[in-house]
Length: 113
Image (cartoon, rainbow, N blue to C red; front, side, top):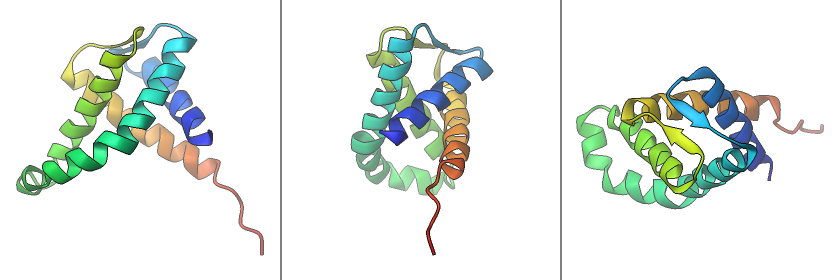
């Protein structure tokens, strides 16, 4: 649940920061966050395995394209979540990843001694 909310906040921040990423309403925001989470959980491991050789050949740069394609897939599944092309998808995936990582760091549960 917390990860889904973090994805929603990160998607909202991404849509506010990048002109090529648009989320029209709260339903699209929550649906987009859910779609991104499901795609990352189900599709990403398969695609990482299949595209490993090209990722090695490009010294890891293809991973940015792969993230952008998964971000674009989520946008194509959810009405009201729109992108202006692959460059916006790659940028959106990058910004969303950074924002979500920072949010996870701040929301990390404190360890008791």
